[in-house]
Amino acid sequence: MNVDLSSPALADHLPPGPHRPRAVQGAEFLVGRRRALQRLARRYGDAVTLALPAFGDAVLISDPAMAKQLCMAKSDVVANVRPNLGRILGGGSMFALDADDHRRRRKLLTPPLHGKRIKAYEEIVAEEFAAESATWPIGRPFPTLEPMMRITLNVILRAVFGADGMRLDALRELMPPLVTHGSRLTTLPDLPGIGGSFNPRNRFAAERAAYDAVVVPLIREARADPQLADRADILALMVQSSYDDGSSMTDAEISDELLTLLAAGHETTATTLAWAMERLSRHPAILADLAAEADSDENTLRIATIHEVQRSRPVIDLFGRHVIADSLELGPYRIPKGYNVIVGISLLHDDSREFADPERFDPERFVGARPGQAWLPFGGGTRRCIGSAFAHMEMDVVLRELFRSFTVQPTTAKDERWHSRGVAYAPARGGRVTLSRTRPSFGATR
Picture 1 (cartoon, rainbow, N blue to C red):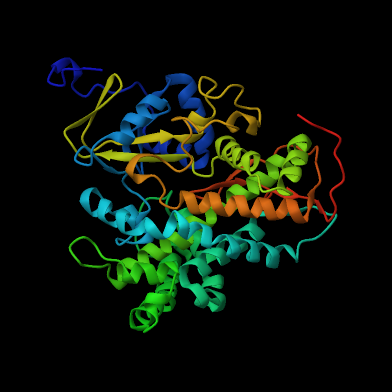
Picture 2: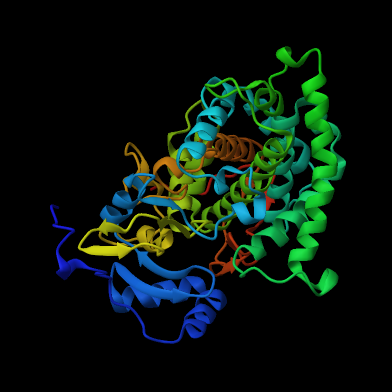
């Protein structure tokens, strides 16, 4: 689309939107974000102008072409959405970096989380699943979210710290509340440091200090390890890596990036697995086919199922960019400097123009077909989640081992509601499931 951006007619050409006071719009957004987004999309269409307390002036989009255009925008036009997770994870986290700093850091951290390195972590995932699942009840329903959290936390601890990951009980105790409090803070404006322990920001600050007290000494020990070159854990790779100019990350930057991996990575993966249990237990034919596939070396249906869980129950429902140029051309609109442009992931995934019969849970839509540009559970563009390959490997192995060891009993219970944990959306009852040790035939095929 060729548009003369100098035309006065296009100045501040924003989409329509509600005229309610900022505080009212913000309250609706905080109290029931998913329902608010759905109402806005129904009334105003694929682009809506909003005024929000945390995000300020913003444009919400739910059109795949505009989302792609936003993701492809140059770094001198848009930066990461403001505020972002950098305010929680630290200034050394990739979430806090933009432009060249972000590109350099991403290039530095990509190798440990892709390719052959990923394959080496599969055995760790299988071991942690076996250890955790040995305690699961048989024949009665139980919520899977917390057990999945323990699996994914132990996996990332071992992947990050190697042998040390087996003995980091302090982090196993610290990370769950740190993740919970940090996730809630992301949806709140910055609060003054008053109120003592009743202020969630103060609680998080204390937990972050406890985290640094454990992790920073481990970073320094790694730097001094005479066997560092022989180690394959992520911490060792971070310590040894360097930018093109020969410089390397500081201890504080590595600490922030490790927190990003430990917190952001394990929660979203575990929550997706809990949603998988919630979805699959309501679809006995798919359960039967997945159980049969698990006995082979194939994973075509399993990967398609993971894609469909991520489409139908996206854990993260928003991502965005901040306009830093004078304006951003987006479809027929011209968004001025200072605005956030927010992509409604769940709105895209529920769009019948992109996914036929979107309310139907149907992994077949992804069998033999790559997800298109409307499928964005990991975000998009240069800021797409760097741990996506690791997450998919982890979910694939957990589901494979689960179907090899257990039968998931079908249920006729109502779908579990969406429950906001702050950043992530989880099944309200924790992804409850009933397991047995044997696999009877369900007598159903697709």
